[in-house]
Picture 1 (cartoon, rainbow, N blue to C red):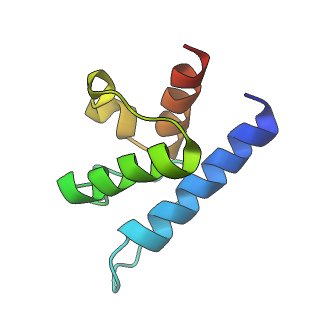
Picture 2: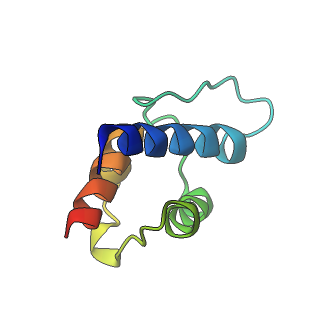
Picture 3: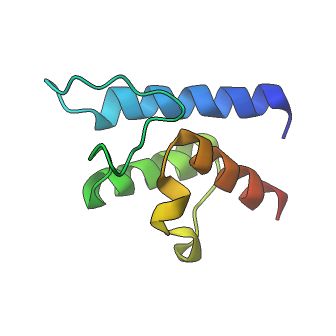
Length: 88
């Protein structure tokens, strides 16, 4: 994956999370290092929506073995997991 592609995936993830997972009225601006679990942005339903986005829009299905909270701490860790899965 090139740096441009990594940057594009990062931007797409940040935009998706901001537009689809932040509830109306929540005063959260999502950035690459925003803690997704600690901030409450990821619960079971939102995680399912995120997994669907990764599969459908990014083209990388996330296997059950990767469904560890450590892989979903923030956008940076999600992009690292996607890169690892793409290179496997």
